[in-house]
Image 1 (cartoon, one colour):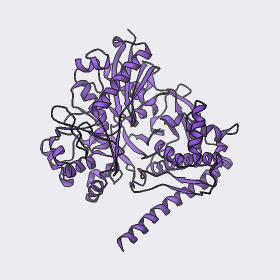
Image 2 (image 1 turned 180 degrees about the horizontal axis):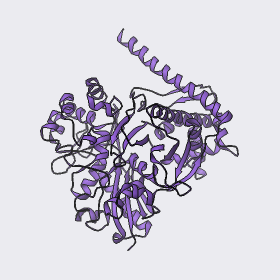
Image 3 (image 1 turned 180 degrees about the vertical axis):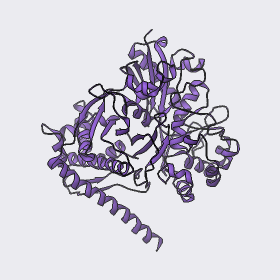
Image 4 (image 1 turned 60 degrees about the horizontal axis):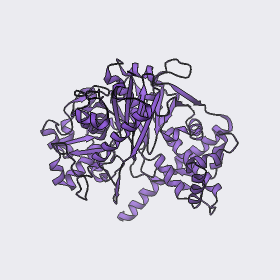
Length: 547
């Protein structure tokens, strides 16, 4: 028998599975698309049944690619986006959609329909909000549940279980309704450091009925990530995944947090253990999450947390991020007149459009010098609001320096300028953490964009910190697999799992000199654009209201 672990990751557009050995080496991987519905009013919905089927298909395909069988798998872990799943008391889907379709039973993390509910909750000033940077986000779950109660009361009344998507996956696999400390603490206001829900919060915001049944609908059993659940895979789930019944299943993590455990610790390039308290895990996908841990609680205005034992047991997590990262980059470059033709040429060359643009940007020159292409063009990429450190969901994007140039060269300039803008947003988060007592000297990047040398170099120069790439090409999947290793009992702790399975790879150092001066100047422009955009919204709101 070959000891291996499976990690299952559900992102915004697909479900993926990876098979890893005990040293964290990737043996096989596969992915399967998932369906999404988009409607006016920032409505984004998915189906839990569709997602679960995609997970099963991905696991079976990954096992085939890895050449492993059911007897080789010692444990399985899940991670997912922080999306809200509604089920009835029997575990069947309940609609969250104005369409009334029960198949559409997930409000996706990026769905901002609960904007009014978010504002109402924030006006309460309740003490639990201190653990979300002072302002709850429409991406979190209690505003979404409150929206459902207000707007779809019949559906709300049918819901027997509200779950984060990652907890839904472990429930379907094991029939165990336990929730992960990670999900409920980071997205539901669970007070993990006190092992309790705050009943007064739910009563004050209008969700008192969730408290009245002892929180049965949102979770009575809360366990740390990696805790083995139930009796492992049920017979039904084992058949669906192609695994053995009883295979240990771990309590889950949010997707970005899975990337965090696989990158923030482990061994450096020299083989020595790294200090996770001096690192930040920056996961750059559709959105971006920036996770730092500390031995004591540190409150950072506009940044989520501190959350106890939400990622690493016994440590306090602070979670920043950008609501749109890869999504913002894709959206902005697609606005350019030359994008369609460039995309066709890239496809003919067997490349993605973004890889093609990077090749054009760097050419045969110095990767750090490529940033100078953005000297006359400035991008504020807050197209889906500012998650942190401004905690401003109404923030919007700005492009300054536009001309009538429609050439491919100007598209490349826009691409580079957007990368710079995203990196300055990350630098703002690091500045806020540093002001609150963190001493971070290394950014560990993962997610699709992290494979780009240009992205890593601009991030290093913008933040003035070393940027490290994980050795594994699939850190989020590895983090989920590490949960499976923990649940299997083959490793005794998350620290032991990180030491055995996580290692650092390539490094990018900040360049200094004229490159440093260039980014300092562009960062000043970035900060001023942000201030101007806020002022513009205020002025226009006053004009519209007649004030």
